[in-house]
Length: 120
Image (cartoon, rainbow, N blue to C red; front, side):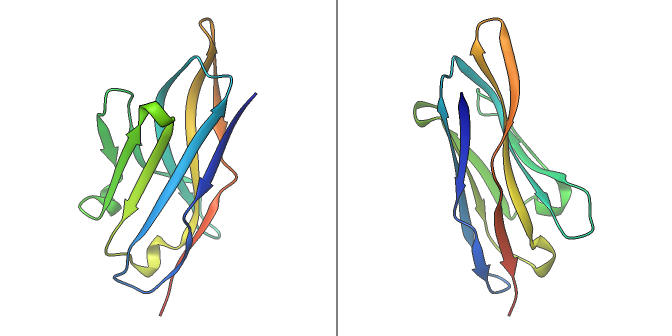
C-alpha cells in the first residue's frame, strides 16, 4: 500500500512564502512524475507543477517565476517552494504521483490535500 503525505500549508500574507512537502511511502518499486495540483472553491482542480524522475520540470503559466518544484529521489519526496504568493493562489494543494508498486503495475496516488490561504 502506498501513501502520499503532505505538509507545509497554512496562512500567509500576500507576498509571503510557503514550502509544501509530500512524502511517498509504502511498497514502492519506482516513481515516475510527481506533481502538485490545486483546487480553489468553485473551480476545477488544476496542475500547478510537475517534476520527472530525471528532474525535468513543468509549470502552470500562473506560477512561473514564483514557484519551484523539486524532488529528493532518495527520500521519495517532492517539494513546492512558493514565493511572492498572491490571494489567487489560495486553494487546497494536492500531491499526485504515478507509482509503480510492481514492475508490471503502475497506479495514480493522491495526497489528502493541504490548505494554502493567502490573505492580509
